[in-house]
Structure formats: C-alpha cells, structure tokens
Length: 530
Image 1 (cartoon, rainbow, N blue to C red):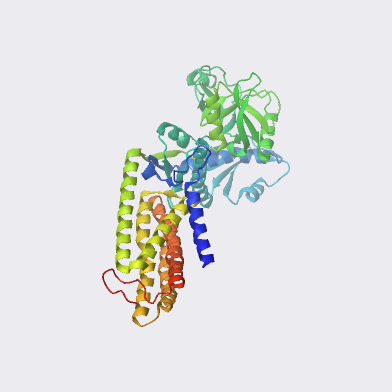
Image 2 (image 1 turned 45 degrees about the horizontal axis):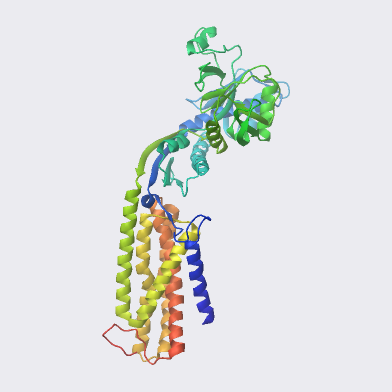
C-alpha cells in the first residue's frame, strides 16, 4: 500500500509542479503553463500555396550555372549556358574539351540520371526528366514548410503551427497571439533568394532607365542576359546581368550582421566549401568586372571585383541596422524555393478566443458536476472514490499538456469534456462487476479483487482501440483535428491510471483499515447491504 500511495503522490506533485511552475524568474506561479491555440488566444491564420512551377524554373536556372561551372572546372570549354523555362531545359553552347573526346557520352555519364541529353551541332540540350521534375516540386513544398518555420522562429512567435496539407502544395500557418499582419506577410511571402550574377561586360553604369541601359545594344536585350531593378535608392535604377547564376543561398554556411571598413552596417557572409570554390573561380576569372548581389530579384549592390575572394566577405550597401537584421533573417533561414501565394487569411481577435474559452470552461464544469452527482448518487461511497480519481485525472491531464507543451484548442476542450465521461466509464465497469459478485454472496474483499481483475481486460480493450483511433487522427488530421486527438490520447492514458490504479488503491485502503462486512456501492436511498 505504501508503494501505491507513493506513486499516486508523486504523479500529482509532478503534474502540479509542471503545470504551475514559472517559465522565467519574472513569471507568476499562479498561471497554468498550458499553451492556448489560435481559436482560444486569437491570432493570424493563413493558408498558403507554393508555386511548384516557379520552384522548377528556379531549380533549372540554378542548375544552368552550376552545371557550366562544374564542367569548366574539369577541362570543358563552354561559350554560354541558358535555360528555357517553358520546356524546362538547359542549352549549353560551344561545348568543347581536349580531355574528353566523346563529349556527349561524358555528359550522359555525369548528368544522365536526371537529364535527357541531346546534341545539336556543338550545342547540347539538357531536359529535366519527368521523375526529377516531380521530385523537385515535392521537395519545394517540404522546404517551404521548413524555411517558413525557421523564419517564424527567428521572429520569436510562440507556438506557431505550420504544416503541409496532405499530398498538396498548400501550407497551413497558425500564429497564436500574433497581430502584425504586414510583417508576417513580408516574412512569409518574400523569397529571400540570394544570388550572385556578373554584370554584362561594357554595360553602361549610372543608367536611370531601361532605354538608357539598352542603348549600346540597339535598344534590344542582348542574348543570355536579364534586366534586374536596383533597390531604388538613387543612382542606377536597373542592371543588365548575365542569366548564369554564379552562387546561391545554398552555398551559404553562415550570415551575420557586420560592419564595413567605414563602420556602416553590412552583412557578413561565410560560404561552405563548394561555394568557396565556385566563388574563387568566379572572382579569379573576372577581376575588374562588376558582380551584382541580387536579393529577391533586386540588386542590392554591384561591387567591382578587385581581387580573388573565397569563402568570407561582406555585402555592403546603403543599409540601416534594421534592414541588415531583416536581411540576415531571410538569408540565414534560407531562401524560399518558390513563390508563395496567400489563398486565405483570417485575423482572429482575442475577444472571440476568450468567449470560446469561457464557453468551453462552462461546458466542462457542467459536465464535471453532472458526472460527480451521478456517480455519488448511484454508487455512494464507491462513487466518492471515482470522483476523487476523476479530480486526480484532470490534474494529470493538465500536467501532461504542460509537460508535452501541447497546444490546447477548442476541439481540444471538446476532447477534454469527452474525457470526463470516459474517465468514469472504467469505474462503472468495475463497480457493476463488484455488485455482481456481491449478489453471488462473495465477501467484499473477494468481490473487489474479482471486479478489478475481470473488468481490466474489457477496460484495456475499449481504451486501446480508442487510443489507436485517436492516434490515426493525429497522423492523418490537420489543425483542430490534431488538437482533439492529442487531448483524447492524453485523457485515455490518465483515465486508465486513475480509474484502475488509484480507485483500486482507495478500495484496498478501506478494506484493510475497516475490514467491512458490507460495501457502500449501491444507490443512495436504495439497497445498502453487500
């Protein structure tokens, strides 16, 4: 018996400690540590869609430059590399090599797993295979979820819920307690895509219009080039850059706020080994040329390459400190793999959440009172044991919610109310079985032992099957369904412990201490003998 009482005391003490302990030195012990969901606390709800076609085009564009750089580092000579987003292919022009006589065969050995390669003269056309396209688009959604999560974490939003809708390119975003919609828009929608592209040779500097920029080329866009706007701080309004991407965010090892040699805010960048090698090759072959740093398709800066750079440098421009911090957040968390569209947006006010919370609490209280009244009336003293076990059950559930840092939602409150009824269901099975044994003439001690032993199998069968169903809801469901499933699973575990272990302990204590000839397990004002 001492062991049983010790286990019960420890579980209650630990549950209450976890539930009410302050999260920091400034917090109060009086506030329960239960995280409230969006529907109870208020906040921002968004349904996002990832443009997977845009992700595919970005991947092919990046591969266009990467493939060219990789081949050139291994004794290939390539005049240019361009991509066609309409048919998802890359064209390598003027491909020659003194090291590999059969260039087509060598390209197929290197790239044939993901690319279908055809030769047209000295040019080679690389088309991304369908299987690889599907993989790129699926990875884009997965990466978008991960990188949006990183960005939201950097903002310090507590308990965000970010999940992918099953087998779709849509993302569900729930930010409980958030109210700055514009900032969330900026963080979620802006790609944070960082690229390094060379400025076209002899491109005019200081051009304020596109007409002025294209004037040396007869007003037409030169081949294998693109026009990118600048950040719009005066001076040159747009730049003429090569299509080939020399470096991207995936080559970044670290990014941090820094200062340039004049003490002005700048962004420090450290590249990984692959990025350092590519950047060294780019700067080594382009000393004297201008290298544009492009973030989200806008030119931040276009410094002149004065020497060979490798894996550590800074990005400088007319930035203030806040812009540097925001830029670091976007680059550090990684560029989004594609454009993100907002399909649905709702701002839930705290009043609505407070009303829902109050109504849920009232419903739970009414359910609890009705259950207590019924159990005490129908089972007398045994009903009191079930009520005490029920109160312990509620304390354990609350403690487990706090310990697991689970988010309590409105459907979770529904699961909580359902758990109140389920918590005494096991006691009803046991008590009815004890009554049957008493009617057969068994002594109270024997009746209690048989009642708990025989009802245990039925209790476990019913609760395990319900637990499995709740677990399936947790795996397959989204949003509110998950909140209901979590609460139901926690309630099942706690109710088995309290209804079987704790109630049995109360009976054993009564039988050992009082050794009664009868059990108070019949309805009040009804049969009183056992």
